[in-house]
Length: 387
Picture 1 (cartoon, rainbow, N blue to C red):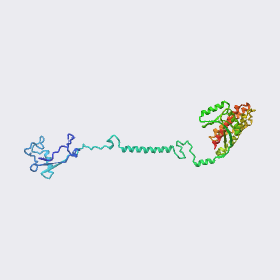
Picture 2: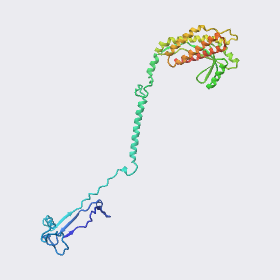
Picture 3: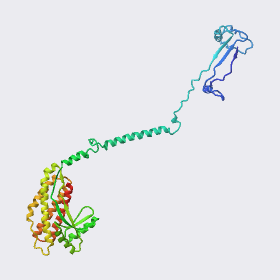
Picture 4: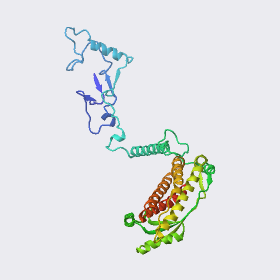
């Protein structure tokens, strides 16, 4: 029997696939070419009756042990049936093919970002952009929650405890509801002893005058002005200024005119405190006018007979203090400190005058003058706070 066909190296051997240089792509992947093998009987149709052709080195299908030569072997029977399937043709063809190796697997492609250690630039930019958008949204949310411009503040807001600013319409309506009335004017002449930018120097000047038994009052705001006395008119003020000129102290006369008109209070405050406030100011001004005249006369005289007894002012003083006590609860909070300054200044002037009437002394008269200076400055501040 002859075998025709191309000699093909096995696709794998010993369980491993072997590749040769120059093999095609299919060979490298473990695939084999289809091989056709033709088996043809020598000379004529194969005689498979069990006779062996001479000159052959061995049987193609050697008999198994125990079988006789005359009987065909199982291999020969199979070959006969195989060749008989070709309809008696002398040429029998058998097509063999080597299947693709089941062991070979396609190599999975790795994702692009796994080839290098760094992530793609597109992914990084996308992450940064998303973070910026999210941060902007959260920032606006927080600002809207805690710093809302809505006039109606939420009870859950951090600004819930604050009073909202009234609208222009509400502010105008509130001002219309306030009642305007007038208080008594105060006209006086202050004796100014200087003006200092530094508070320490002003305090030193005050202590220097007080050590000599003189009056001395310093303003709180800079520049700090020093006032050494007060009178109800310029003639009395000149009498007091002569005293300082004899001691080589430079003084200046400053007119003080406080207009009490245009004072405004709410309707509720006006009903509760309007009458008391007017009486309080009238009594205070009466004390001021009386003691300013008596102190200027006593200090300006070369030989004073005595200090006038302020008995007529005791009832006025008591009535003024009672009204001031009630006004402390009725006036706006911004006016209360100035009201208290007025009460203390009037009380100082009355108490010093009462003591000077018992024991006439220039020092007590100057002490009463200091109380009157405080009264004039406090009244100016009170009227300003109510306008």
